[in-house]
Length: 121
Image (cartoon, rainbow, N blue to C red; front, side, top):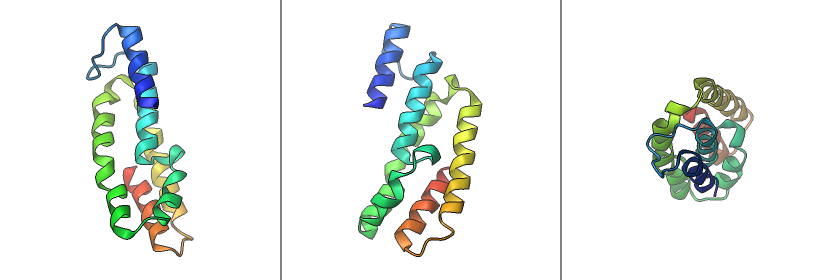
């Protein structure tokens, strides 16, 4: 829903549905936030360890690897119109929280979830 709202905001402001060149920084920041939620980057990572804990290992593998490829490609494409400080902050927070969160874990799937969060950074 957030990705759709960001694309509608971009279309409303720019007058076109072209997502490859998002010139509006507000719509670009909204789509980056939505994609960060989708892949589990640090400020929006809270769902990932609990969801991954409840899945079997093969489904968790798919969730923590293959599901992140398309949103990451979209982040790379739309990152041109966003302030680089936003992406740097997301990467740094993700690396730190993923590393610190996995330190005191005893369950394998939660360790893998925090490792995935750190690797996204």
